[in-house]
Amino acid sequence: MNRWLPFEWIAAVRFLREGRMQTLFIISGIAIGVGVIVFMSALLTGLEANFIKRVLTSQPQIQLIPPDQIARPLRTGPGSLEDAIVQRPSQRVISIDQWPKIRDRMLAIPDVMAVSPTMAGSALAVRGAASRAISISGVEPTSYFNIVRIPDYVVAGEARLTNQDIIIGAELAKDLGATVGDKLNVQAASGTTLVLTVAGLVDLGSKGVNQRTTYVALRTAQSLLGVIGGVTTIDMTVRDIYAAETLAKQIQASNYVEADSWITTNAQFFTAVQAQETSNTLIRVFVALSVAFGIAAVLIVSVIQRSKDIGILRAMGTSRGQILRIFLLQGGLLGFVGALVGSTMGAGGLIYWHAFVRLADGSELFPLILERSLFINAAVLATLTGLLAATAPALRAAGLDPVVAIRG
Amino acid sequence: MAEEVLRLDKVCKAYNIGLPSETEVLHDIDLTLERGQFLALTGPSGSGKSTLLNIVGLLDRPTSGRLCIKGQDTNLLGDTAVTRLRGHTIGFVFQDHHLISAFTALENVMMPLLADRGFPSPDIATKARDLMECVGLEAVSGNLAMNMSGGQQQRVAIARALAMNPDLVLADEPTGNLDTKSADSVFELMRQVNREGGTSFLMVTHNLELARRCDRIIDVVDGRIAG
Image 1 (cartoon, rainbow over the protein chains, first blue to last red):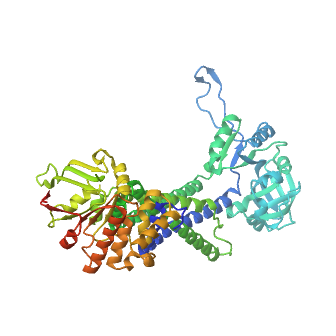
Image 2: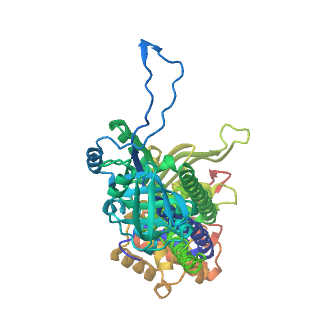
């Protein structure tokens, strides 16, 4: 006997070891439960990370735009207007007022990771007889590429944006019959025309987006769209993507801008992510419950089987507290060992699945994310579940009348 | 005058109190046991011997009357104090030995000391080994209880009962399941411990031949001491 182990621990381990088959079955049950939790959690974390990476690295997480231009009717007196009908004015392309100051203010917010001003508008791309309506984003490459990872989406050429360069969607290139190095005429609605060189082709994962998206340097867009020195949006990424909406509201409240977070602009996607999280939580809860009931059932049977031993232990001076701890420890130990085996099974299963299940192009279906915290949480959760599940059997064991227990 | 280890004053025990099925199984039991005495408790089945033994062993409480162990009135003690007093003062030997099957013979003997101290220590193991030697089983002390004969198991149970140096050992038909030779050997072992260590014994037995070899015989009939 190890002299550092307390009496309760020694008795708990011996009781578990003696009921070998019973212990083995319940540990297998717990291991399967924990394995499912680990597998599901890691898989969903990977899939979610993949979705978020795909969606949120191709668009800003918060976008600041100028407030809507509204008509202000003349008032003839308090509460009365000059005209009965107020028409909504058309929204001209205008710059965010004092945008450099706002950008600096955004950079000072600790939760904001990257800020980039953008000049966005629409134009016509003409090459020979072909012309297509395009949306132009004029960006500062150094800051903008931290928000939308354009270099990651380049399928031909490079993510270079000098004043004469244009990066276009792969579908648009196909429609115009253009490729890297070709010249494009880009005409703004005002009539301004620029000749730009295709520096790169990008695939942003959506055909519609690839048919109309183009990127140029900020100054190029400003002169093309006739808003010299101005920007139409300030794009940002934030540290906690789920806090983007709260942050957007705070920014809007303290600046003369409208702030849209990815949560409002991608409401359906956000709902899907939330639904996935909820289903994951529910799976965890129900698996944990079934594990808890399994442990409780086995320990209740064990208390009945061991009632004579409990009676003898009580007769030789073992306190109710010690008996209680012996059975609580058994629950905790079952949970902990089950969690160790289950975590290994879950992680092994995931590694195997990740290695063999691939997308049609051979790329991974999801990134393999096995965080240490997942295993620590699984072990803590399973041990606590074991302890909790053992409470009723342990109380029953501690409450046994020694005379009745010895009689069996 | 020898020290009084046990005193019972007008001890009664009833079950189902207040119900139509109320039954009193012990009536006004007066009994004293002095240090070093070996007392046999005889009587027909159902006469209340085991109930009396459970009350004396602090496993059950009397309905009325007073039970004093080494002069201490146990009626005044709470559950924790009773458990402690039981562990330190009383050893049990049961008819069916009741060794814990998950432990070896030696570990079974260590068990009361381990429960009392909380952690294993070399002196606990030494004490258990000495007791195993005393009952003549040092060679099989590593065996599991299930791998021993009935006589050997009962000897281990006696060694376990003596682990805490109790003042009183309560034996409930310790030879009931043994053949004559083993029964005689187990009884002689208890008698030897009683003589050499001065430990008091209260032994329930149906074996009149063994009872006659004790210091006193108390006959219990219908819950009363007949003689």
